[in-house]
Image (cartoon, rainbow, N blue to C red):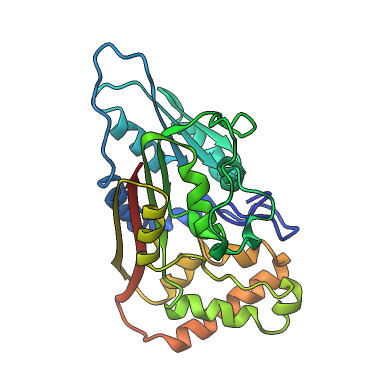
Length: 310
């Protein structure tokens, strides 16, 4: 994204927005199912006769907005007045997302870290030292974008780009109303050969010097750790699970196109166009040599789904 890592972390590069909505949505159906599984964990608001209070929801890392629109429709299905904001930092994604605006749904460009009110050096905080201070002493978060607290903070496949999840979850929980819900889905697939290979190539010449030693390593924790974190943050209800999704790709080469829509954006953002094309070509060559030439190719994908209510 233009001033962050893909999904919401601090900028460490000099190149433009790496996100390509068309590339990302080549596997739209496969990427959508985890969203609906996460949505099924959310308690939807009932219609409250005579109340003027709006139900406030925010979707962190909203991407192209199509699934944010589905979230908004589900929240408003019982007639409750719902205001939903889709938040993303990719101009390319938001240009497409804003076509879904209206009826209480809007889209804004901002970083997830800024929304959470995390300090500038949050990524270097020692997770063992506990949670950071709340972003605002008065609970109103007046200095943050999108002031006030929320009934639902929702994030589908975005928080894996933010470092230090103990600090992150503490900061997000501080922006929930009493009784508010947090619902998050994150890929946890670094053990798959397709992900390990990208790290290996990034550590080689000529990429390592250009990347300044950067390697994309997921900060996603084990599911048990998230359960513990939610308990320590005083969520009175929770659901945490690891789920494996099986995707049937026509052939193994489609896996390259899959990761070009997400994982490889981390390197695209940090490499010159020429070096990035070389990176992709080498990645494709090695991946096709390493994985079985099967038709279809069965791509297993691990994801963490978590939900909690304050």
